[in-house]
Image (cartoon, rainbow over all chains, first blue to last red):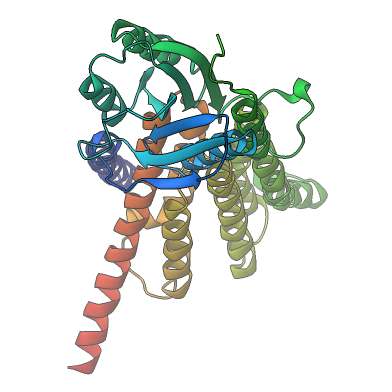
Length: 199
Length: 179
């Protein structure tokens, strides 16, 4: 065996082993629940009270987007509580006028902790639900699937928002800066425009 | 006509083109970063692919038609590092990947640079630039956050493997020398 072939085989074997280890780790990391307490993003306001439940994902993008969305809502007079999706997350929605669900999209679906949390909520009793997803490319199929799940549980979907890392986020809407900065500005604007009775 | 019979001017031009390709790779790095951060992953992937092609050609051109030097080899490694850092930093800044693979990449290049005088067979370490460029290209072309995260994590693991391998050999050599 020539030295070049031996060198290539060693590199290929090392990369294959690394890729398999990485795939196992990512499968675990994207489906594990992250438990945090309820953090008030805004404790004053008269527009209504909202619970924002999200899955942080593996990069800081979902966290920054949901924080911006919550900040926009707070600026519009919402009282907003934020927490992560887990078995320990608040499931009693009494006292909340709106449920906001945030998640990164993996394989055209929301992260498992978020879908499991939504399942645990059971009947939403006509409560308004907004979806704020982050994706590499198109968040549409995941938004569609989660909206269907919320509607099947008698939730009223009042907003679907998708922000991407792989395609420019709405340059035509006049937001400047990097793609992430545009997405954050758009999320803040979307949160500010959300109203309790929005269709 | 074999290359030995080429006129000296032509040989010098071929060798110079090798150095120009290294410089071109360095020049493409900020473009790759800028386009990734702007969410223009198509142009970023094309620029990265072009830079990878320069990495394949520059070394052989200089070795065959010019005089390979230690400085030239360091420029080659520096251009590789700049490109890889640009791609992974861009991905982290764009929310595509977390920041930690970038730390692993910086650490692996630092260990590589500090152990270049240690002669041993380290196939992955010798190819780490090309491996990381390929993984970065995969990240740019993948349309899914989980798949991108898997490739970014693979980059981190590959860097960790090179660090462990080099430090293990250096440690063994140090033990032998002190015995």
